[in-house]
Image 1 (cartoon, rainbow, N blue to C red):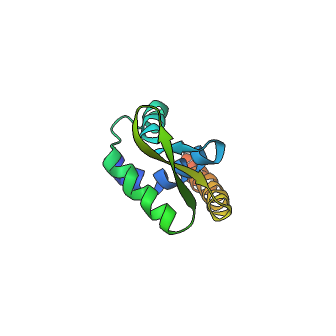
Image 2: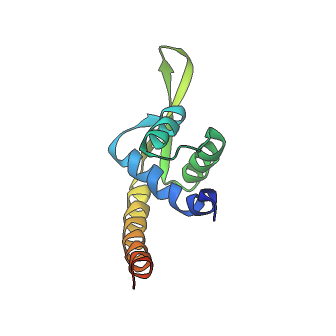
Length: 106
């Protein structure tokens, strides 16, 4: 199974978790995800997710001036996003416990 198949369901929770700790713009978020180990991740995967999360009111975006060129859109977590992250965290813990038991049996 390719990592991209697993990534689709997990990336949202990872993005929300990063945004819980700090407000950041899209490119910086992509770089953080890569630093955490998502080596094959592209901006083309993250930007549509950011748009979806903003449309669902999980995050909010704000244009800010950039010292390096055009304005950047900075994203932060909303109350709805915090609730979604808590749900993800609970579901991930349960699922990863089950998978770990299955993988380590025997």
